[in-house]
Image (cartoon, rainbow, N blue to C red; front, side, top):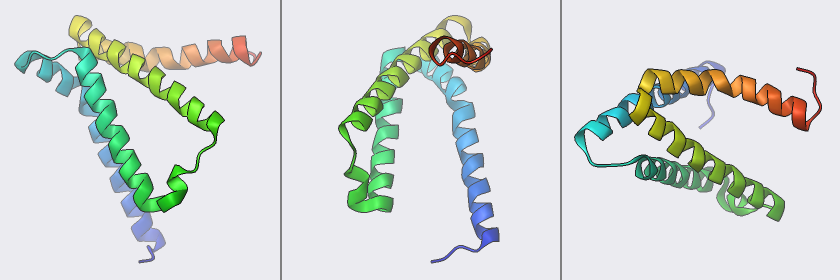
Length: 129
């Protein structure tokens, strides 16, 4: 089925809204999990990344077929490194929520990312600040 420009734009807008809703509620959901269960940041991060990875694998296989599994060694190693760093980020973020609350953890996370990216770009790529 071919999507028209208008229907593709609507679908894209719907997907962006859904992504924003899911992303925006993760902190509050995690805080609620801490209050009603005996979970910890490691298990929350593990299940979040595991379910997300499975969804991406299924979606990639459905959309790309066999091409989804063609990946070079360097790209596979890079993907594994990124996955490990995402796991560390998840555990740190969810631990911070338990200590300082959702608002502070999210604010620090969102505001520090551009500053850290600029510093890394200056240090690693020799870009001007």
